[in-house]
Length: 447
Ligand SMILES: Nc1ncnc2c1ncn2[C@@H]1O[C@H](COP(=O)(O)OP(=O)(O)OP(=O)(O)O)[C@@H](O)[C@H]1O
Ligand SMILES: O=P(O)(O)OC[C@H]1O[C@](O)(CO)[C@@H](O)[C@@H]1O
Ligand SMILES: [Mg+2]
Image (cartoon, rainbow, N blue to C red; front, side, top):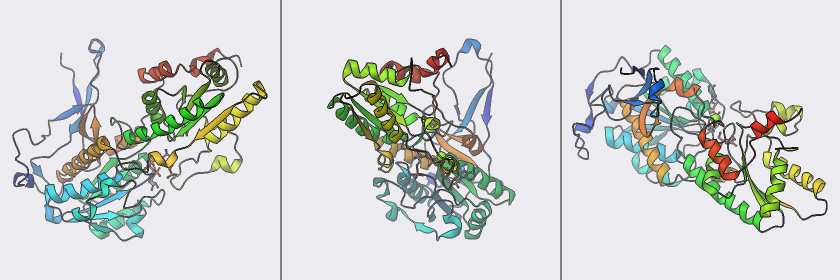
């Protein structure tokens, strides 16, 4: 018996008229039979199944790509592009490819960049963009448009969209940005404006759900290797040396996990999704003691959000938030360095010991995207353009099981991609590092 498939619906703008896709006449494209994507082309959310136990309906998303008919007259399009939240390798590539794609694929000529994130809609002058201007942007780290946190004022933003006559809005940002984009989409719908709203997920932490991974993540993992290698060299070259590396990852440890798996120099990886403890049987100190005895050194990788609840802080530090409302963390690396020194001094007074702390922070995200991420950014931008031109709104483009799909914005905004410490990947980390199974040891600990 065939299993039913439930297809996630993408909202469409209703007041626009169908017209032929100008790609038909574009001299660079020769649309063949399979060139256009049809409404029945879908991507399954899950490709691995236990078919003996499979009775649930399968979830599918509409496949991204050009449609034979579009809903905008290209000369009537006025597009806005905005980047929000922290930096991520590839932001400039996405902007570049949105501009070049709109211009070259569809003949759009009115394309604007909103400076400095959401606040730029209502407090700054939009910048007119064209392919010549953005030609080399993919070679630069950061975002030429500038970004910011906070400043989300829904009514002022939608008033500005309306006042400027923008009818396509491309919003590049992370989980917070996507939640803001949902609000904008709802308010635009409430006002019955024919404005296509699309989100392009950006997060160096890889914490946005549904999609395979976020752009720039692989570049960041690659950059993290340099820090880990340096920590390894420093630790190896000392007597009883510890190399300590802090990597980005506010509430998810994907960067630390992937950097650990690809480096093989790491003895222990600590992430926010997993509690750990220092003292006693099965604790971190016992493990490090053994490693240093066996190898003479150890390398520790810590995601910035790991162990935050263990760091002493005063009342004002407990309350501190950034402009977007995200909790401000204390430096787990600085704390670790001091507790490691105290521990060694206590256990091995007078014996040589060195902790070299490396904090590459912004160096892993403030770089241009690598080749793989650049290609990914291009496909994301083009997928977004095809979807908006086809009249879809309130959606996000992204790869699912290697194929590009359109996903409802609200679903992406609600879903968080966390490291699952019960799955194969985390077990693999533990098998590579041989680090303690803190979660299991916790249970065995006497209170
Ligand atoms: N729940 C929300 N509703 C509306 N706007 C939001 C919400 N959360 C965050 N924003 C806005 O989205 C923008 C970006 O949010 P934030 O600083 O949290 O970064 P992000 O998009 O999560 O990216 P990253 O965390 O990867 O750097 C800010 O302008 C912020 O005000
Ligand atoms: O200092 P900023 O720009 O607020 O960004 C720091 C945060 O941004 C991220 O890179 C992405 O959320 C986090 O890993 C980090 O905590
Ligand atoms: Mg975020």
